[in-house]
Length: 109
Image (cartoon, rainbow, N blue to C red; front, side, top):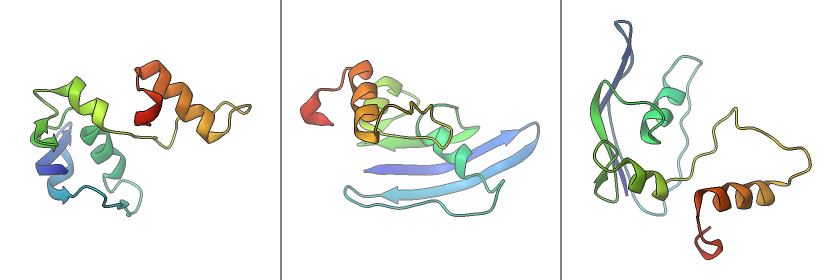
């Protein structure tokens, strides 16, 4: 389960994510929809540990990103919009490549 509690992000006094609360149960699939500048990418960067929130917390399987960043990152898969692309690799090969770099066993992919 992923649980987001009171998540906020401010840049130079401008609030870009304001008090987001969300619970995602195991097996659920969802998408973030909204116009440019709505905070979708910023939210995902906080959830995946790429940036720290100004306040609030992200929990994955009852582990907090703040206190257990490496353990939480091992539990999350994230493919950002601007991910590098290698024309000679199909998606499956690219994911296998990244998993190998991260030390993820083949049976856990």
